[in-house]
Length: 185
Image (cartoon, rainbow, N blue to C red; front, side):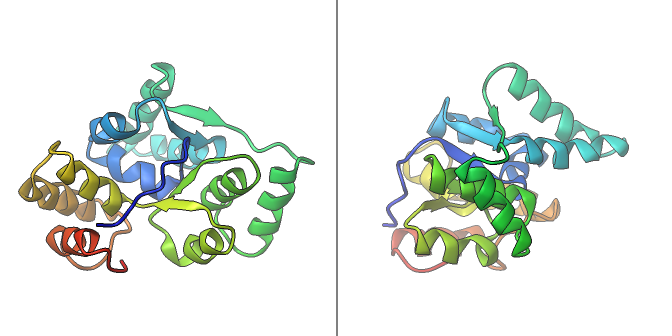
């Protein structure tokens, strides 16, 4: 079985936290990572953009509510600090703001990167020995802990895909098989 990093806090980029926000299933994150879920302010800003669209505004509203309840902690990257310099370096290399913020915080301060954008984050995390989790890891962990069934995992996975979340092309059962057999994603 794949061993997941245990280095809190869990630093969530936009696509990762959105996977759970869009379908209102933050409960899964809270049960596994209670009090350890952090998002950079740039992610809050990216998600706040959805307020412009009536049909999508609930995603931003839910995030704001969870921040107010202190279920999710917001952090900032400050210019001139080591993480601020790393953040700018990553941005100049074409990495998105959310990914750059969580990677620079994990590398320079501490934490585990939570991202579905493996194309942009996997090599960086491997290079600097940073912990990395993605949505499939969380769902697979929820199944192994008995929080949800594999069938429920497939339903959640399909709901996330309907909301255009960045997940592998295969179904959740395949993701769970790979997780159990410690195979690459």
